[in-house]
Amino acid sequence: MRSLKNTIAGRVRPATRLAALGVAILLNTTLSQACQAQIVIVANRSQQTVRFAVADIQGDWRKMALQPGELVPIPVRGKAKCQLILPSERRPYELVAHSLYLVRADDDQPPQFQRITFGLDTLASKEIVARQGADWKGAQIGTIRVRVLVDDEDRRRDSIWQEKMKKRLEAANQALEYYCRMRIEIVEFGRWVSDNQLKDFKEALAAFEKTVPKGSADVAIGFTSQFPVDHKIPHAGGTRGPLRSHILIREYGLRVSEVERLEILLHELGHYLGAAHSPERGSLMRTVLGDGQANLRSFRVAYDPYNTLAMNIVADQWRQKNVRQIQQLDQTARQRLAAIYSVIAQFYSEDPVALNLLSLVTQSPEHGILAVRHAVLQVALANQKRIAQGKTAYANDALMTLYVRTAATVAARLPPRYGRQAFLLGLGLSLDQHNLLNRFSPIAREISLAEPPNARRERLRVIGKPTIHGRTDLVSHFLVSAVLTLAVGADAAQAAGILKEISDTHGGSGFSFADVAANLAGVEMAEALRKNKLNLAQLEKNFQVSRYVPEVANLEEGLSMEQLTSRYGPINSPQFGAYLESLRRQIRQLPGFQTTGNQNRPAPARSGNAR
Image (tube, rainbow, N blue to C red):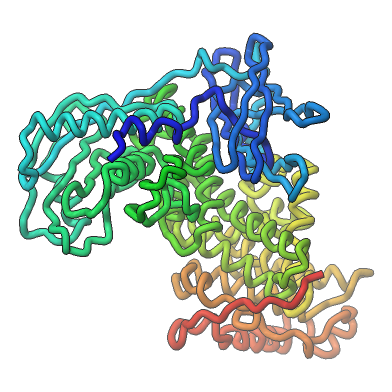
């Protein structure tokens, strides 16, 4: 078998060999003249070798190259000048701290850059860093102090297993230092007595946490040989989450090579530093390890770009702010991580880890709202891409259904105390074309005011035209009334909707009972959520426009005040009140508001090629 040294050499590229550029996912950083080097991730997603040069803080240029599929982290202060080296020219670009750049290139075409702001433009600081550029010399290495243990089922002599673990962890350090400027330091070896009765890995992890203290270390890593070879345990390793105190890994009982054991260790250390599961088959954070890939000479020991960026955000907090628990992350780091986890969750919807991490770092209503808003915009971008490719895409009511379900999916994983607020405001702010929500919510007002004009134009472009019963105006009525209900209560929200329609009788579009029906449906949904008669998980599974908003085709519209009064009575009359109550009853009898019965998930059917 090849040695661990040889398996790492050539698979983790040296820091002087870097990548080309493509899609830039920007996580702007707060900077000061005294700031330490932050990180830029550059990953080559093209099928060609890409070369470029980066200027350091002294103004000197360093040439670099990445092979297809490779990535490199670059420590920078503020921003760094970059030149993409092409056969006939050098194209100037700029690398922004806490950003991810992916190279994209069409067939036989040079790499192209597209910048995506990730919805976090408001994190950018206006402070100027005196000396900007790449800063390889100033990049610090953080140290994770570990206690390494094996259980009583491991029959090897202490000197043998300890030497083997030293080599494995040193090999892991090569990858950690390259990808996130962190390394492991062994402070103690030990043994523990594992429970022979435990056959469930999660129970074994809990027992390890309970019986083995981490001592002076940051984390205790246990290697268990408790489970027999033929016992089908779905976990090769596990930890409770980022910066938790214990990691448990199966040692014997797994039919894997030493290189694959290294993969499992790096996978769990990735989780320790904030990585989620990845859908990328070549990533260390893929869900299925021990699949033989690591034994191939062509395989690279590599984290995927999104998780590399997440790990660096946590690592920066570790080095610069002495963060040792996830609760200690500052607000800006939480927002960046929430944006990354939201993207991964959209790419990898069948795996819950990214959404669980999103819930973990979302500790304020603002974070939750931004996470929901970002998720909606991500599916909107994906839908626009389908349209550009001439593929079947979501449109009209199906597009509204997609957005509501996406918002509910993210909000359902947030802390319950503000999940509903995040759902309604995040969804509303995504679709709000006229800043209507600013009147009712201070949080919405702050977020909207911070949205740059160019970002607003781009948001409105990619969102498209979601509808309720084929009408775009009813979307605003539905969402504004729901948010207003959250802010001032159902009665006041209903009254506000009626007053708006009355004002339309004076030279406007006239009184519309279709608008009123959409208003009442929004109020009913918000009230049902508030009273726990409806939950976000139900909306995630079964929302469709027709299940929550009544048909409006037969409702009268464009009425003058005289026509309204003659047909339905004065606004404060029993006749008018009775008609409104009939609309409410109709809404409450819709399938979505029935808390019992079939909750199967009807799919949001796409409406052909959306235009």
